[in-house]
Amino acid sequence: LAKTTQPISMDSYEGQEVNITCSHNNIATNDYITWYQQFPSQGPRFIIQGYKTKVTNEVASLFIPADRKSSTLSLPRVSLSDTAVYYCLVVRAPSNTGKLIFGQGTTLQVKP
Amino acid sequence: ETGVTQSPTHLIKTRGQQVTLRCSSQSGHNTVSWYQQALGQGPQFIFQYYREEENGRGNFPPRFSGLQFPNYSSELNVNALELDDSALYLCASTFGQDSYEQYFGPGTRLTVT
Image 1 (tube, rainbow over the protein chains, first blue to last red):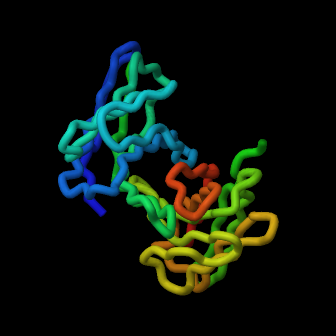
Image 2 (image 1 turned 45 degrees about the horizontal axis):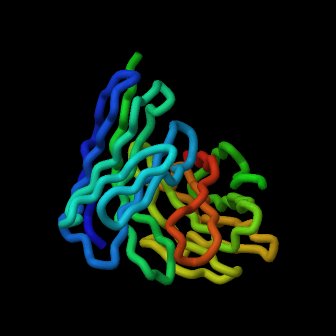
Image 3 (image 1 turned 180 degrees about the vertical axis):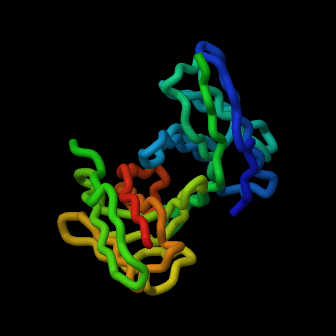
C-alpha cells in the first residue's frame, strides 16, 4: 500500500478553515483515501473517504486532484473541540480484510 | 443502538503475566479488529475476526491471540507480557470483513511493569 506523509502538527484559531494535506505518491488504481480523527483518550473516528475530485459531508471536505498523489482534508470554521489527531490512510478495495494502516497523523491544536 | 465498549479501562500487569481484554461490538456488527497504540504513535493492526474466525493478522507474535463469540463480543489475550506491550489497546467493529469505516471503542490502557 502507498505510504502516506502528512505534517506532524498544525496550529489554528477558532473560526478559521484548516486544510491538512497528505501525500501518497505511490497510490494504486484501486486505492481509496480515508481520514480518521482521534481525540485524547478515545479511539479513532471515521471522518470521510474519497477516490477522486471532491467529497463533502457534515464534518469535512476531501479534495483529491486528478493525479491522486495527494489529498487535502478541509475542516470549515474549526472550534476548540476540533483539537485532535487526524490520520490519512490509503485503503485498498476490494480486500479480504479491512486492515487499517495508521501513520503518526497530524496533531491539530485549535487556539481561542 | 449501543456503541463499542471495552473493559477494563485501565490495567496494570507484571512482566511475564497473561492478560485478557474484552470488547463488545456495536449492535449488528459481525467483524471486530484489534489495534495496539503506543504513546504518540498511530494504532497498529493486530488482527481481525470475522464470523468467529481470524481473518487477517498484523506483525504480532503468536502470544497475541483472540476470540470472537456468537454474540459478536470478543477478547484479546496476551501471554508472557513484555514491557513493550504497554499501550492502549483498541477494538473496532464493523459489518463485513472488508469495511474501512470502523467503529472504535475507547480502548484499554495496559501498563506492564
